[in-house]
Image 1 (cartoon, rainbow, N blue to C red):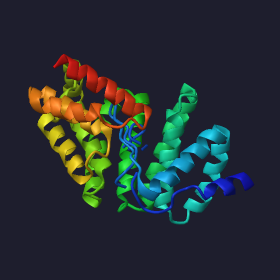
Image 2 (image 1 turned 60 degrees about the vertical axis):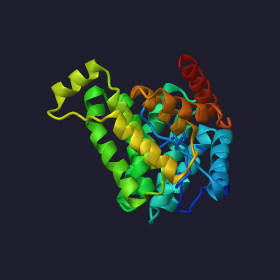
Image 3 (image 1 turned 120 degrees about the vertical axis):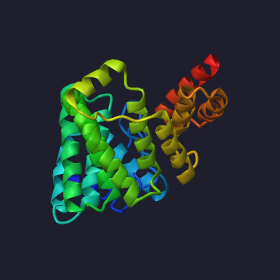
Length: 279
């Protein structure tokens, strides 16, 4: 517990940005990491929050999963009284652990469900917290990998509802807007066989268009220009889907030239370069 109390000070308590981490990919605050490769969400952090979150993530990675359990238990004691802000950060920390390459599949599943439980409790504490809504949506999306196609499609409605609520509560959070764009893009490009399954299971299955996705990606850029390399890439990819090669090339170039601060940024550069070559 002494160790837990020493690490506790790294938890960022101020209400702020979250996506993928700069989130983005280890998405869904204005800057929080975004985690969008498949439907998940970015986390992009910045300003003072960047340092605090970086310290937290570094501490957790260094100390390892067993120590994290101790920290987590100690944190819950502090959080039970009032703190939705602490609880959604614990959800993010659990999710970060799940995403680590050294986390086994069995452990990953445990952390994914743990993250969802923290996010759920954060919402119960404060339904007016935009970050709680955002992280609840992100965590439900993650859990869908273990629940089967029917539950995953049904959860899509819940995910959309909470991203929309997060945007309503904080329209200046670029990552929430970005994640809503990913939701639209995901269902716009849903394969025919998945659409068929969805229609069999639901009278009105979730659907969207590339135009809707494009609107959210542009809105995210307006809120926070160049905040996330993946948003630039998805703008280019969406324009490709809409057969507008000129604007696709413009945004893909911006994605290719985006400074590679993270491994995800490097992956974005590679994909953008490949798509530009195809043009």
